[in-house]
Length: 288
Image (cartoon, rainbow, N blue to C red; front, side, top):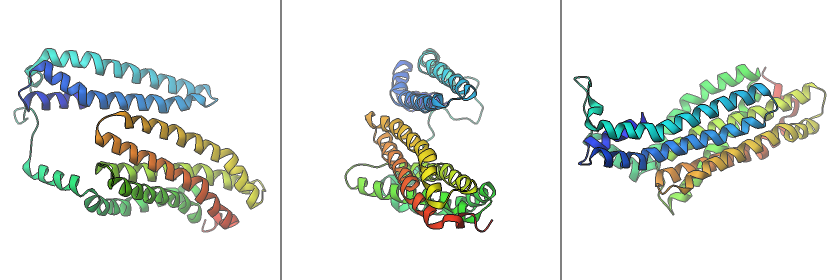
């Protein structure tokens, strides 16, 4: 879909012929699709390390599917588009517009967003977080059965989001940063923060239930779940760093936001969270 839409925009929105529009499409959307596929493949390789035939089989099947989809998208689809040319819009709906629909109003709004990303992005994200946090908190309470334990993953998510925002603000003084990097920082920071904290908090509570004292439970949780979190963060960070090689500033912005979100989620999970667990101790199960 991404490549077909880009082809239609390049062909009908300019004076390029079918071959040139295909080249333009693959030079932009094609690179994005390739990167997306490679990122998915790299992420799935981590599942191959799990000592479970079921997980490995599932990961291998998904990887093969991604490889064949990439092969068809980057070879067969461009050939078909170049052959079809203007006929790609044949049998279109009567009210459908060929090519790109350009709106001056949306163009003006987009220009303001590019020029002042934080001015518009941060208030919007505050509203989104205000809507997302209560829902997430309720789900975490249902998972943990404790309001105190449920608040800890949210704490790590907040650390990740705030740290990433600070990083983007600093980088904005030295290089261009896409406004969409703020969205990625929020979603990835909150998601990874909650994900990493879930592992560690769950293991900590299991060790307490098994009779360990608080220092022993924290140590064992970090020795087991903490190592898993560290490996996951390194894998995700390396995958995201591959976006730095593309000469497109918005992809580099995604890399900045993604790497920062992973890094601060890791710091929150391996530094802030253990300290909070040690301070709370048995009180982590209060407000059940």
